[in-house]
Image (tube, rainbow, N blue to C red):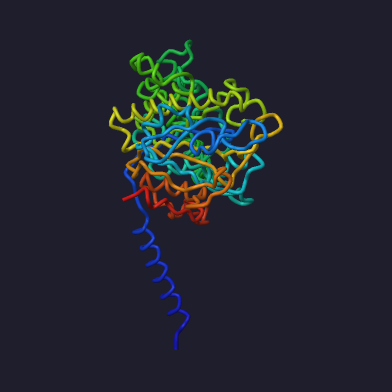
Length: 421
């Protein structure tokens, strides 16, 4: 006779064994920081990392540019990625990313940043916040998570709380405005202000000891004064770098990438760099209508900055421990719209991983002759997240908690196993 208690014991043992097996099977990389390059708007994969036969920009579908060979035998990329092509052996091309949201940019961007569809009961954290939560800070004088670009809910910490949010930059010359002391406030006056604030803050926190939101805001307030010190703010002085190096990185996006390297070198765990230079072609990577005609300006800027970043990280002995990601919310179809541009496509698009101790020099996934459909090795957004987390030594199956509710770090994502070992 088997009792209910026996069944529960057997079930618990089986679950424990399964969890242990999963933990053993989950690969772990050696990266300890991530630079996440965000091509907001939906970069056309057949015009960048998955070139196909040439179209005519009107009725004949296909790539808008010719392709060139790369350091990966048999793999070709757009002709405007000429600096990146010989460095592709430091990278992994993922040509088979896929999801179901093609109609709306914000929803797709949220999916790629959180790895999940929205829930009516839970606000999921962004990948940057999860990395901040799991890896912590290397120093209390630098933040764990920085975003270059305007604040956006898709980058938020969700149920993890404000402690795991980000410091954001809207310009790169001086650092975050909120951390810079006004010119009419001398150090003595600042100390008096901080002492007064500390008394008010600590008293309020004691009276609300059970309120996690109050405690998180109190911790952030204290951290802010530490971040206002010279160690973090000196990172933003790009003039400390040789002018020849600054020129190698190129324009505004390139300077953001150079700053990302300096931030990682200072101890920041996750840096998102937004490529939102819409003035280059009128619409950024959202290449409807005439925006397609000047798309090459975006690709050339990306090429220059990305190649410089890889080589700079390599010279600085940081490439093996820094995972560089190129991501976008979806791709574009091979057909051209009535204005000569492209619409949206999410069933097949590309991403890229570089460095991070991965087994690079690989192409993962294959699309059909027009890059419309994945025909080999589909990679879901949760799989993409699981791969990034695993590269950073984070277990993608671990449970986080929204209150008492367990929430796995990824939504059943599986790391791309070929990249580890």
